[in-house]
Length: 428
Image 1: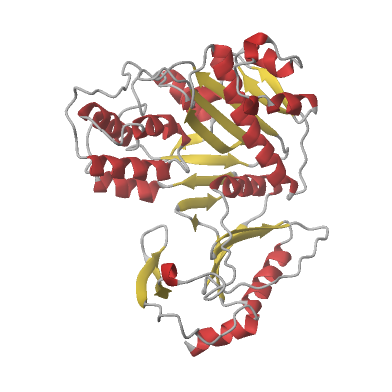
Image 2: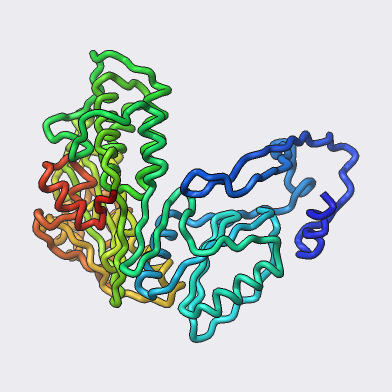
């Protein structure tokens, strides 16, 4: 413990104080775990002395705590941007997760990008010497270990090649198939059949809800690199509280679809652009007739963000459903623009591609007509974004609407076509 105390004092961020007399001794225990790489091999034995945080009081036991956590979209944007700048990404690990200190920041001609997730750090630069300097600086200030080029981060397997970056969770997928006993059987080409409409199935036979929830939770984590299963997983997740055999069959079909390994590919590209696709499945839910929004955002040809979301209210028309979907897409694009501003990238008139002309006309009409008064005000902010030329709602033919894959089950041909355009490819 003396070594850890010396580290705290060296960084001048921790201070050892006398325990107040009225406080009970906080219970602690040692927690041991093995850290593994993407191949499942043990690379480090880790031990932590864990205190019962619920016994601590702010102002007595601690003043302020902060753990930086990057969103997965931010990690994917970081990787997409590195393909544009054509530099290698490296990884570092902080040996003590709570050793925090102040670092002075300098900005010159070269670019150094850093992403932090609690005690894991990835970074890259247009100047390789700057990467080495940053690594040496961090290791001199903190107890850290340099792990070399990035290949495994937050459960994502990352392969950096001359043609671009491959992102996958193949190891995790194999573990899931083995865990739930779906390693063999008929392989399907889509995660959900077009001729099956899931509903509550109140007369159906119940299944083990704990197992069903475990399968759904495992699949939701997998959507971090597999957007092609997002809609099917989200739809099945609606029935976790009263799951039936029909719902379990739908979930098992998703697993059979996963038996073919696929990766998300970020190709290298000299240009830098931002765009989004927005779509809606009007009244697609059989039980409550609510619509489902789907959206995806691209940095160049790299898919960095996606979502599938059921509306909280019933839409009275297809135009309203599409209009709400574009509002969700607009919100995400504005956040991406703000994040990329730290990369010194600026965009105007970012296009959102929608296949509903009526919804496009509503975003461009400055007058609130009687037909749009029933739409919640929070969805009308996109009109202001259009008028200020922050975004631009553009028409796209239905056959080119990539967001379709996030709103409804598709035929094998259509699904495969959109999947390829999203950058998801088969791998051995």
